[in-house]
Image (cartoon, rainbow, N blue to C red; front, side, top):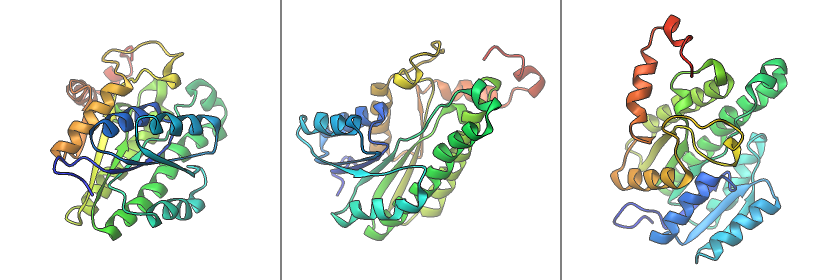
Amino acid sequence: MKDATALPQSLLILGGTSEIALATARRLIARRTRTVWLAGRPSPDLDRAAEHLRALGADVRTVAFDALDPESHEAALGKVFAEGHIDLVLLAFGILGDQAHDEREPLRAVRVAQTNYTGAVSASLVAARALQTQGHGSLVVLSSAAGERARRADFIYGSSKAGLDAFAQGLGDALYGTGVHVMVVRPGFVRTRMTADLPAAPLATTPEAVATAVELGLRRGSETVWVPGALRLVMTALRHTPRALFRRLPI
């Protein structure tokens, strides 16, 4: 169960090697979290992530999970919830893709969409039902500021995140009053391995900053969190920029 500060004692990460998710896990372990499940494709990276969190004092377990195999989600997540209540599910998987290549090879674009949207829809619904059955818990969905308005430079990724964001908001509304809380997190450009080869962007942030914002959002019971907070105003302005002008912006 969550403690009096709304922080979880048990955590399930969907996307167990995500740098943002692991930074969040470290922060929560330093507060109250004692049990962590890392769900992801079996790999040395997943094993190393588990060992790293164990060294911080948490009871860490792994479970095989593939975002691109929705038919397996029920069994994979069911295994976790069968072991005990989960206070927080953090949906943190996703791929950036390569816009230039993906435009030329539609199957690559489909993989981005299936991972970031279809896989997330499936996993979120399975997790939400399990949380509702136990009567409490939070689902935190890592969306992206890129989903607020798709840009020419990354509209395949941006459109997949836009779909996920809209879905997560609707799911939160559907679960309102059930004891299950849904929080959507919209980071801007995050400096991670996934973005290491990309030029730095204005208002860039770090996994640790996102983790801090997630903790604060949980304490406040927030439904939407922007990281950094100033990004909310920037994206509001861009969302309302006339299309003829928007397409000429150097973004």
